[in-house]
Length: 111
Image 1 (cartoon, one colour):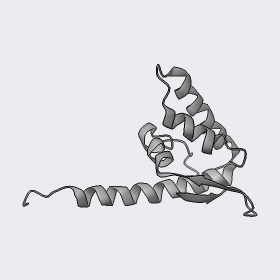
Image 2 (cartoon, helix red, strand yellow; image 1 turned 90 degrees about the vertical axis):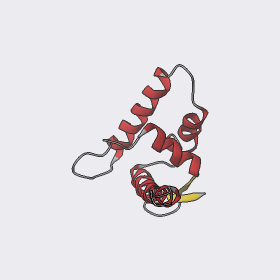
Image 3 (cartoon, one colour; image 1 turned 180 degrees about the horizontal axis):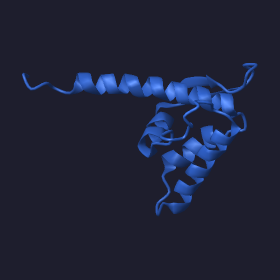
Image 4 (cartoon, rainbow, N blue to C red; image 1 turned 180 degrees about the vertical axis):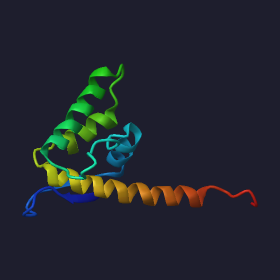
């Protein structure tokens, strides 16, 4: 379980689980989300919410993991632009560590 700071004063936080991060990876929710300027602001958060809502509306079968991500994180009352920025940073760190773990787990041709 991870915890991200959701506001500038540090009084609000959101708990993030590995399942949440796996769901973000499964649906590639952060791909193309942030513009080339690199700023994460409220319109970027709105864009994420619209993308997730579209996924939920257009899937034949509701994915419980995606619904949990929405309820626990994306539509959390504490989620603001800073929270999303911190979530993206956490996801990048998590993804890079999982790439390394998967590379170590794969046998090489010499084994």
